[in-house]
Image (tube, one colour):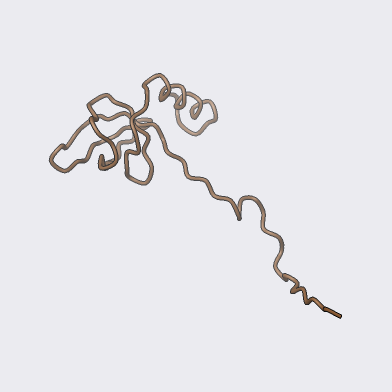
Length: 97
């Protein structure tokens, strides 16, 4: 006879929030460039942040990029960026843009 021991978990089951995580990249407009340092200043809802351009090529003033943890991940179309920012504002995540 084969017996199987099942160890009971004494902790409560994890919720979706505890077990799943999601990262969010925000669309931001490039408002200043420092080509020598491969850095830029990006603006989201009038908040300016310094971002690294190490992962993207050919970024110019006025371009929109997706920003996550201090890095511009890629360039995005201005119309798509503005639609996304409008959805954030509608959801109450930003002020009126």
